[in-house]
Length: 168
Image (cartoon, rainbow, N blue to C red; front, side, top):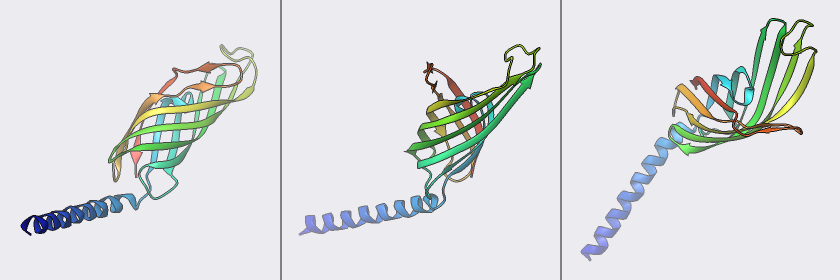
């Protein structure tokens, strides 16, 4: 009889702790994660400003990003617009990001440019395999990882990127 009472009491305490933990997690999970960040390299190809958000009221799961970047010097200019879907796996503030997207790249130059002699544009496929530090509420965020890029003519598997931002 004592063993049965002890088992029932232990089970009740265990269920109570689970409910308490789920309540704390649900308060955090009620708000979808959103990030603004600057990225060097990565899916934006150059230096870009980006917005990333989850599609549901969670800190992980399916989401997307969009950004814009521009660089110009000595008659050369390049603008990129990365758009992608991504999925976050993880807990608390540590996540693994997997993503697939595309970057529109508008390039051009005048007759005296060093890199580009004519205006041109292309779309490159992008992927993301990165570590993401994203606080459970709001604050500093960080991403670093590989961002393979490709089109019908080439595949660069070891292109990398790093980003710093703010999660809210």
